[in-house]
Image (tube, protein in one colour):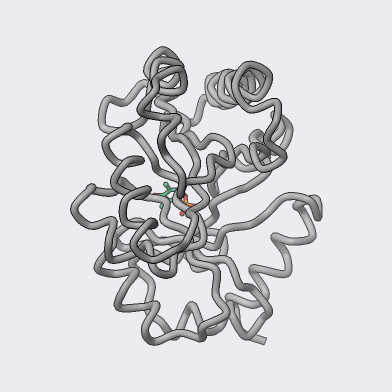
Length: 223
Ligand SMILES: *Cc1c(COP(=O)(O)O)cnc(C)c1O
């Protein structure tokens, strides 16, 4: 069995069945993705549009591709025809761009609202106030082709797992508040995308529903 297949099996043993694993294949070659595919995995995450497009064309059509990285509005049109979920909605402008491209293709796009829960300024995402302002606005109500399925966040890059835990806990709290106040009529608002190779255990304890795992499956990245 390939190392990647073995890594996947080991990981799946440690993760409860109801939690989705997004295999983050960024920077890794198509041959690696194919090994995970042949081991039965179908959900893959990429963080760059061009890389995603290149890989998608060379991989089987039944893969669910997830966009997990910062996305520019002018690139939305390239991924809307096929993307399964966008985890990284970090502005109303971007959400509107997704809606407008989705109109053209007749699709409805599953989206997560990315929150800034870490200390690092380099990590993007909404604040809670920004999201509430958006959700209350008339312009938001006009959107027809985006399906808001939950929230996403990245913890601070640190070995301090108590800090990471508090950040995940705050995201799970935001999720519950939003569900209660704005999405109580939506069965689709149910995902919390948090947890990566270094902190997925903590994320599981704090209620994640989707973990995004790269290094544990594919090995360390060189860049
Ligand atoms: C790279 C990346 C991951 C996966 O990181 P690993 O530590 O390799 O598991 C998860 N989420 C996002 C947004 C990423 O960019």
